Image (cartoon, rainbow, N blue to C red; front, side):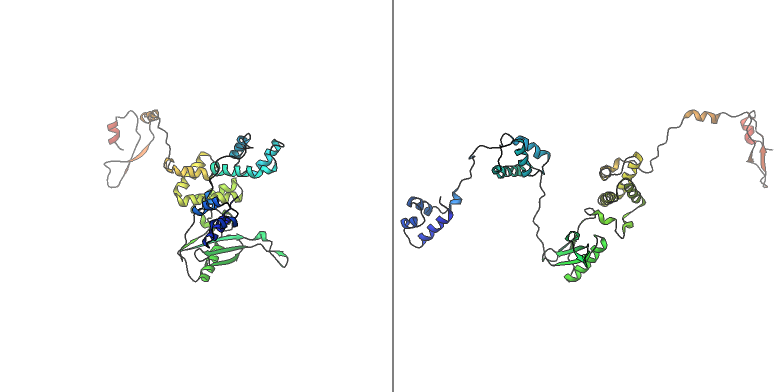
Length: 348
């Protein structure tokens, strides 16, 4: 089999002035093949055609439908695990020598029909424009001081263009550690970039429990009530995570819409969940206003009792229309038998 090295040596000998026959003998080629490679500037690997045929029958053709169903149900299954399952279901049919072939087959299926993968785009950084920071928990390293375990966290800040770094020691992923770490990094950098990028409270809601200014994360009493209801219904970690996501929703969409959604859920007797509030915020225009009060239609027959006068009305005081300047009060017992016009003008 002629390899790329043989052809390169052939061309080297020809460039030195050797004859075609001598160069062919020295590279273990026939003269005809040497002439072919001399006249063609391509190397052997460039002249190969892609193989579009199988050299043997597919050993997995009978079981691939079952394998594909398992991959569709559980895309995270490893090819090695599936191959061991095939060996158990069909003893002797699939020796270990077929494992690599099966893994390539599974890899091909995942690239064509598997779940979508996260796409990463290459980024171009510019001088002085961006600094990025993150926390690294070092508890698993097992660092000890005087034989006592030293649990700690590192705050890492880097200028993305020059890769100049700054590291600070801290003990939690808190806002205080973030602000102190950034301040230390900027002093060491000797300047301030245009932008700074850090992790979201949403991705790491555990910092909410120990946040020094946590009370300021309740914009109104409605948010505080929502957080207390979440704490009553869930564990502390779950409640913090859900509340931080509700805060994010209020910041991105509308604080009033979140409050109205929470009020609607309480009125309907539903549990407060992030997904439910998100759906209500999306249709905030359909929610009833806080001041909407439902008033039943009056019963008209109730007005009939107002038109019926009793036989004797109670005594009442009334200022006489033609009273003197001493403002004497006219007191009179009115009977239902008196004419209405006389009742209106008489006084005693």
